[in-house]
Image (cartoon, rainbow, N blue to C red; front, side, top):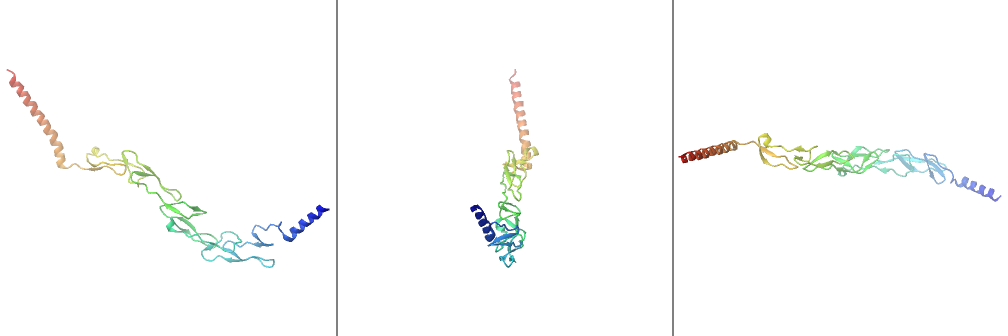
Length: 222
């Protein structure tokens, strides 16, 4: 008898206070009532009562709600700040937030649903390094050092071999390093004359010395 009385009291409580009743998918609980949610692009201006339905109002400028909701105000639109490396790709509407994208030469460091709120500039490779992997919207540039006998000013996608001035018949003005090439120039007429004259003069001197020495040896022979 006691168990039956206890069961009756529980059922009575559920009927009167309705804690066991779940609202529908497009509804929300407000007191004892299940109120209809407002559509995307609007907010709850006045909650429903036992005698009235939910009253909704459209989001004002620069605010939005992108889901059916029971909110009493709309959310502020995201501002795309160029100082943070982003720009507006799609403007905010009452039912969708602003979509921000990265500025050219930047990559995203703070992505959000469908966009990016903050980006950094791509790393600039230093002289002596080459671009191993160019930066994208979501990855930074990857740089790598040049090996010996090659160079890059930082903008190359691969290091270039140093110019061999002598193989080209030129004179080395300045030796190259990992960031610069060898500096070459053509041989001047004066230098060319000197380069030819010195060996010729040396050969003539050697011949004169040899002939003189031979003559002296002949004179000594009786």
